[in-house]
Length: 180
Ligand SMILES: [Zn+2]
Image 1 (tube, rainbow, N blue to C red):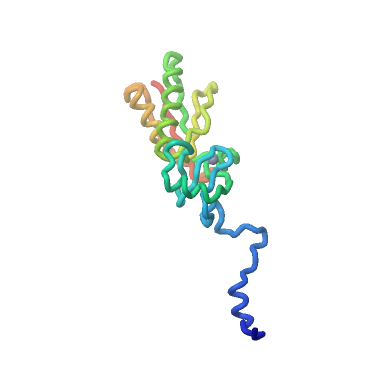
Image 2: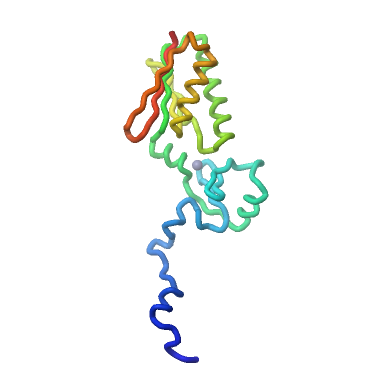
């Protein structure tokens, strides 16, 4: 075999140097991975840049890809929750006691529906304080849609709706609903 067959330049392009930390940059969320990426917390499955709910609705294509390997990550929503961040906030003020259970049930079922549409769309918390109910969401438009849903459920006349934008800590949609 001839020596010096490869020029230095050629050898460089053939034998790629490993990445410093062993993980290529573009491998975030498993984009370059052969199998699928699974969130280690909520078990959402990432396939072809889209998040899917784990379980029965996974397509054969995803199940097949999963056989090739599973790559564990923390999904954007779980990362947001872990960092105590949110993109949407709904404050519901002056909630009459007789409507409290109905309100909380409505928010919970809204969360279920939202996650069925997109598993990354979630209600993070429902907190009760003297001011009223504070609901945070992973997505800003989710807060707006939830507020409108609450308004229509309790009829327009009884709930005033106020929408404001905030730049802290980044783009956050804040909606205030007040029972008249
Ligand atoms: Zn997750």
